[in-house]
Image (cartoon, rainbow, N blue to C red; front, side, top):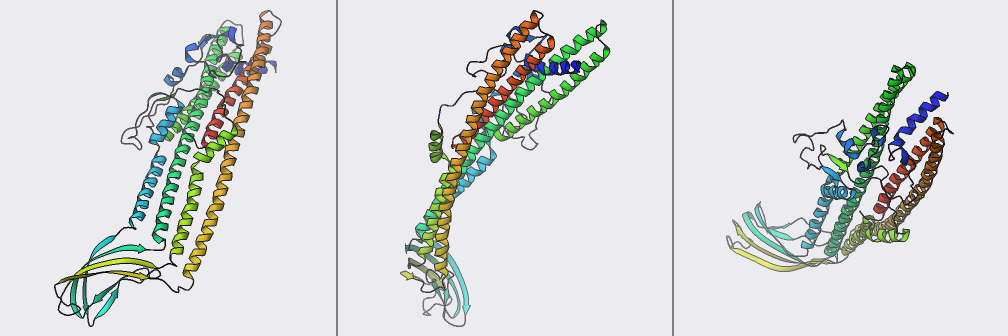
Amino acid sequence: MRETFFKNACLLLVPLLSLFQGSASLAQDLRGPILQNALPDSKQNATLGGYSSTSVNEVTSNNPIRLQVTKEAPSGELPLSTGPLGVDEAVKKGIQNNYTLHQSEQSWQASKYLARASLGKFGPSASFNTFYSTSSLNQMLFFPGDSTVASAPMQPIVKGTSLSLIFAGTQPIFTGGRLMGGYRAARALEKQSLAAFRETRIQTAFKVKEAYWNAAWAEANLRVAADYVKFRESSTANMKARVDEGKAPRADYLRESSELSKARILLNERYRDFNSALLNLKVVMAVNIGSTVSLKDELVYSELTRDLNSFMEEAAKARPELARAFNRVAEMKARRQIARSKYSPQVNAYGLGSNISGSSPDGNANGRWGGFIGVMGGVTLFDSGSRFNELRAANAAVREAEIARRDVELKVAQEVSQGWIDLDLARRNILLAQEEVTSAEEDHRLFHARYEVGKSIALEQFDAAVKMFQARLTLLESIYKYRLAEARLTFASGDI
């Protein structure tokens, strides 16, 4: 029982030793501000028990997985990205390359052109038509149109066979707000599309940050696992020497060898997690899968000085969902204006020039050009309640849009508040974890000092070191959760 507990304590002790500089600095004081890297810098690696702590460069060089994509493969045409990459640089690349964001941008561009198209309806329009007919008597042709607004234009058909070449033009004079409502609706749709583009933009920034910190956390776990393998290799070699000298049974060596195999399996799993996290980061940034990306920013705690109200005020100005909801109301009001315009008369100026060959209305104008200019107006007197119910439906749509806007405002306030709660909790956990690290390091210092003078057994020192290691991992995890909470709060306030 005692031997098993001793072995388990050794198992948990090793990654801790790799996090500190030398055996004499195992009780390094962390009671100051947590502004340093949670893992030691590769330039400050110390030799611990015959091996040095794993650096970022060592993680990259020893990575057994190498992704290479040819140009003919899917996504092979994407640009390569190499070298260390900070979180801000990653966000910039994601905004520059992300395909979902590009699609949203094209939708916005299309809505701008549709708004310009609706503006063009205020101006004149012209057309050229050919008309061939064979008729047994003189009559009139009514061109198809919206008879609920105004009468349809007419074209004479003469008895006999005729071919008409017709140039026609029209200019709206009064539409009762129909054209203005259409333009306002199109502009509101354009602004909604812009808001959707901005929403996708901040979502892309948040996804890049989330992927980046996930990769940083995976790298931290990987470095710990690599240090643990180094310790097991050293421990197994020492036990092999003791067995060869007859100072330990062969069973102890076999147990050490078995633990080394388990440690290497764990290291492979950590490499898998790390490479998966990097792959996700590359996909979010839309760079080549074969890019050799490394992380410049590690898990570092830097406390925000802003209060909740400042994030709320920023969200009120910057959240695209709010702008989209406001413009949805504007669109519905514009469509209500269109519905109301059907109660008003519609007045248009018309112009037409034609040449009729074969037969003409008076029988004497064959092959001659002629034309007219006129103004035509009309109003619908009765439509069995069609316009009335369209207007009622438009009013209901306006009320629905206003209710939806208030609902969006409430949800935005909830998201910002929840983000602030998560950030504050993560900050408190960091402070508590820091106190835990300080306490655990002091316990280890005392047990180590007692062990040096023979007043404590190795098991007590190992147990204290295990608690110190667990406290350090808790601190690392708390910082990781804080960075994620910070990214979510930034997203909730509408910033990147």
